[in-house]
Amino acid sequence: MRHSASILALLAFVAAASAQLQFPYSGCTKALSKSKYSVKPVTTFPGTNTICWTVQYSNPQCANPAEECCNTDLHKLQLDVKPSCATGFKATATVNGQGTPAPTIYRPPNAGSDQYVLSIPGLGLNGPSANGASICLTLTGGSCMSLAALTPSPVWSVALWDDAHQCCPVCATWAAVAGPSVLVDDLNFFGGAGNCATGKDVISELFAPYLEDGTIIAGTDSVTCNGNKITACATTFSKEKGAKMATELEALGPDALVTAVFGFNGECPLSLAGYSVSVSSNNDDCGIFMAGPACAPPTTPFPFCVCNKAQGATPFYLDSAVEVETAANEYCLSVYTAAAAPGGGACASATTMKKAEFYFDYSMRWKLTGITIKYANGKTSTRSQSWGPVGDNTLKVSDLNWKTGDVASLKPKICFKFKSGTSLLDFSMDSSYVWASLFNPDQSCCPTFPAQE
Image (cartoon, rainbow, N blue to C red; front, side):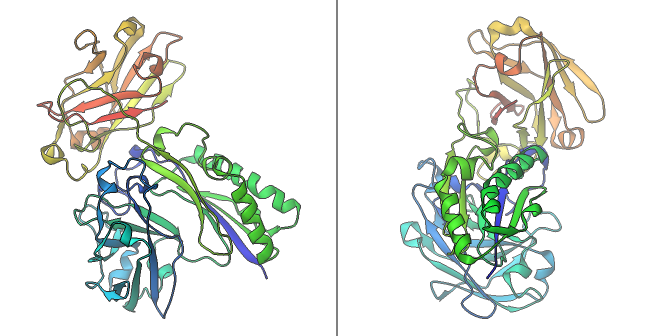
């Protein structure tokens, strides 16, 4: 009997790649490493048109137990679905056999025109007792009468919401797979071509010994990169040989089987901050589950004033990737706009970014030769050096007064040019990151972001 083995790597996402929100199309906290809830990557189908998810509750999953989303209930499950499935949709749902309010399909308030969710509310789960709970959806009407028909891609994605609508950890795996499959997955990571190529090479190396010994008999040339995913399909000689391959891959450990596919070893890259990576199987024949590192977000004492420093406090954000122009020794940081995160209070309604401040080394100021603001329309402006109090190591780029609409259309970059031999990281007060705070006019809001070259 022949079976298929698949590997999916969801790689690092640079937040500025798109201002469009990702599933579940809200500014809620999506990282699994900030929640204790998840669902197993295996769905069950106990009856006609019925799909069930099994809830998992894990204390170690939460990288920082003090996180607000590590101490919440589980109120509803949302599934990412095709817009066309909304027409004529009818369904019922249960939790541990008890009925819930009727499931619905709708477009969330901040979602795009092609972004819809199927919502199962009223779960009433909370804490350790949620572990093992079964959430079942029975489809009774409409054109989408299976999990594969509902989902907009071969990967299903579910969000697990708390009652306060602040936390929504996201889980995903294949909607339909023939035979044993291996999935490398962490959610809401969408990678560029460089990361995709790295993961593709690593997966090919992992499969190579099984090509040589005859375990894999076909299909390895189908390793493909498609936007945010790497998919590798192979046909094994038998179910037994496929299971043996899974056991041997698991024995390689997280460094070879998890982090290498994500393109790093050792210290987590900034693009994975707040997330964890893992490898798991959606078929009992494979039996793989392995956790990689939980990448805790970096912290800083900067800025040295009383203001709301939380990322997402306002609609203004800093790209985590620094653009480098090597020939000119110039480094640019991009500002973009997206919906503010829930719970930002008055800061969430901010419409103007007055200035940016950077945690730079005042003693090296003579090595900075220029500050330039660059816009997508080709226009530029310059700024002179302006520093905060001695000892604060704060460089100010003032009088920006950017509206959200300006940022969306002009895509501004703040660029720093240095004397030869000096890099942006050399100039930073943090040996690993560059830190910037984006202030509103009254300076009560100052969301602070790290960036890396």
